[in-house]
Length: 152
Image 1 (cartoon, rainbow, N blue to C red):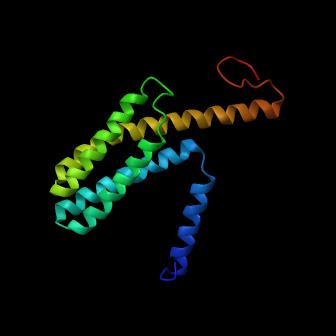
Image 2 (tube, rainbow, N blue to C red):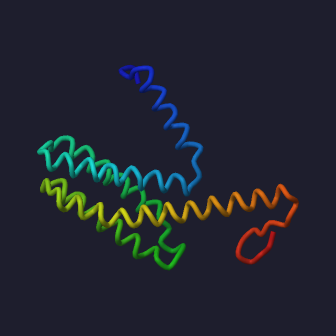
C-alpha cells in the first residue's frame, strides 16, 4: 500500500471493512456486481484492442466464478448441480474469450450472468426484508418464527 495515495488507502480500507462486515447474501451480490463490471470492462478492452487490460479483467472474472464454484454447495438445493455446471461452463467460456480476444463471447458470458445477478439481488432483498420484519416483531415483543416450521 506504500504507493497508494491517502484517499486510495482510505477507499481500500473502507472496501475491506465492507467485505468483512457483509452478510453472506451481501457478499454474493457484491461478487456478482463485480463480475458484471469485470465482464463489461473486459469486453470494452477487447473491443479497443487493449489485450493486457482485457486479460486483467477477464482473469479477475474467472477468479470470481471459480470462487462461486468452489463455495457452492450443490447438494443444498435442487438447482445446485445445474448452477455448478453453469459456473464450470462460464469459466471455460471466459478462458476462451480471453485467449481468442473475443468480445462477443465475453458479452455472451455477461448475458448469462446478468439474470443470475438480478435474481441474487432479489433474493438478498427478500432476506433483508424478512430480517427487518423479524427484528421489528422481536422489538415489539411478538413471537418470531425461526423458520418454515414456525418454531422459535
